[in-house]
Amino acid sequence: MKIVIARHGETDWNAGNRLMGRIDVHLNENGRKQTEILKEELEDFDFDICFSSPLSRAKETAEIVCDGKCEVVCDADLAERYAGELEGKVIDNWGDYMDNKTVETDAEILNRAKNFFEKLKNSDYQTVLIVSHNGLLKNLQYFLFGKTGELDYSENNLKNCEYKVFEI
Image (tube, rainbow, N blue to C red; front, top):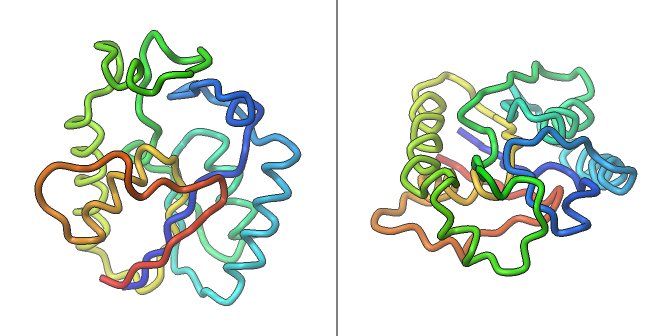
């Protein structure tokens, strides 16, 4: 199976270093331009299906990239990390974010990524696009790379509309 993972396009909150978490923030004009470029970069792929986070920034990215060529299915396991009381705040020190007790734990987000990966690997799809968020995609890559042990959050960051291709 070929799996393409992509992060959603830019939002005004990305540009302002404001933590979105589960707040539903739409793409900005630059994000839509980035998404059109991503669409061109992925035009040679014949996706069987696209799975997306239900948050509009990811879903809009998925719909633009797929352009009606395959079904876009929202899956709650692909939503961004819940950021609790920090959602909507400007974050200067990401250590404060990770230490906050109202934020979804590393184990919880890793478990959601694992749940999604299990559903995916047991499917008959040949070529899949997944559009989600940096936090979730870091965790999903852990399984796509076949890693074990503790996840290193400093690795595998994706910029807005950056993508990676995996064969499993």
